Amino acid sequence: MKQGLMRGYQAVGEVFRTRNLLLFLMGIVLFRACVAVPYTVPSGSMEPTIFPGDRVLTLMFAYDLRIPLRGDVILRHNTPKVGDVVVFTRPDVPSQTYIKRVVAVGGQLVSMSGKDLVIDGHKLTTQPAKVFDEDAELLGPLDGEPIVLNESLGSTEHLALQDSGSSFSELWSNRDGFEVPEESYFVMGDNRDHSNDSRSWGVIRREDIVGKAVVVVWSYGEQMRWWRFLHRFD
Image 1: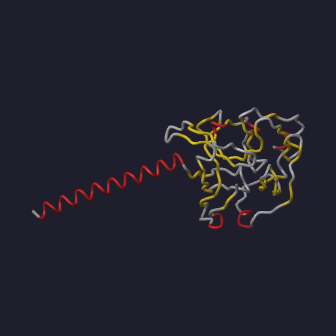
Image 2: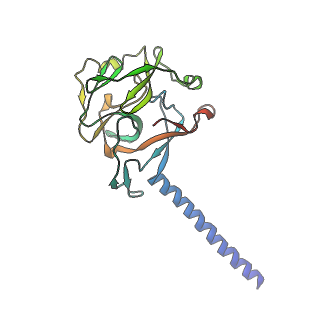
Image 3: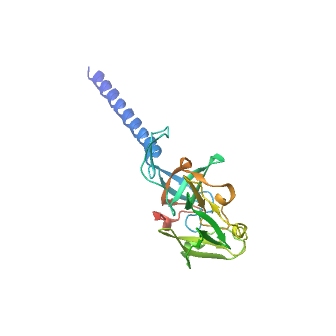
């Protein structure tokens, strides 16, 4: 009799443990689908703001509320703005996910003056800056000397990197400019001379945006980079 009761209690306990595990797993799936997802940065196109190996927290609900797992938009409650760092799927290659900074929105005119970004005919204000010694050691290979600037973009101030030995940005110089279509966004990497971005393959649409990146959760290269934990860049 006692053995039967013990087996019954064990069976009930196993059911509860299994149920709690399933609820826990479902919670993780829903959290990743609806709230936030960590995105591992694979390239140096956002240096010196974000480095390869940084694990970036992306807010899925920053702009739109979506049906869990399906992705259909329920409510648009915010709009991506100039200066936001966004994770998105590339329009012409939907299987590829990128992270870049929004530098212009629909109706604005984008051009380059040498290596400097020009929006609506006004060259952005920049000031010489430097990165932490630990971050400086993480900078990828460049063709020349790195030039780090503090750039004012809309209401956002952020670091931008120029490569004195690269002519990539100058390819966009001497152009009349590109007018961003409505409901579209022109995105660029902070590593201006080493970024595959809207200068190469065009603008992104709102439906391409996965979410807004806000903080480096943790970072790992050859070893843990403790100084970059919880590093904000929005």
